Amino acid sequence: AQAESSAVRITIIIFMVLAAQTVGVTVERVILVRLTYKLARISNLLDQDAAVVGESLGDSVDDAINYLAILRAWLATKD
Image 1 (tube, rainbow, N blue to C red):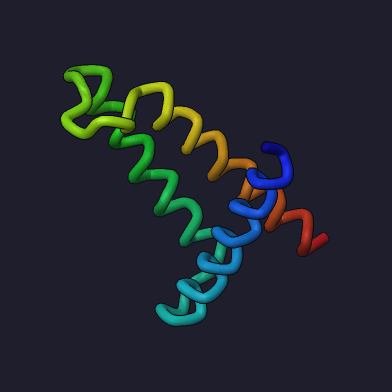
Image 2 (cartoon, rainbow, N blue to C red):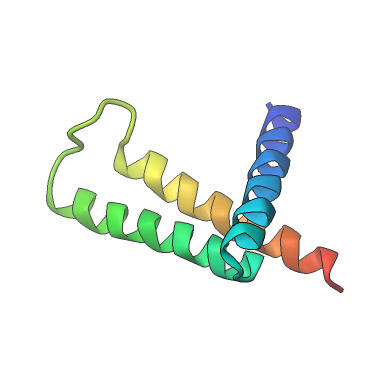
């Protein structure tokens, strides 16, 4: 599970780098935009049940944590 989680994070980082290059913004900004979407999702789920199976409040919190971990990993590459 840990290896799979690391592989997924690496894949997401690569996607973020490519997305940032495509639209001409920093990788940090792309990650923050994705995190903002997750925070909005969490806010919505605090008020109502998930309309889509597998998109629980806990899942969305985990996703937000993962985006922060990805940001931390990306920042570590710049040190």
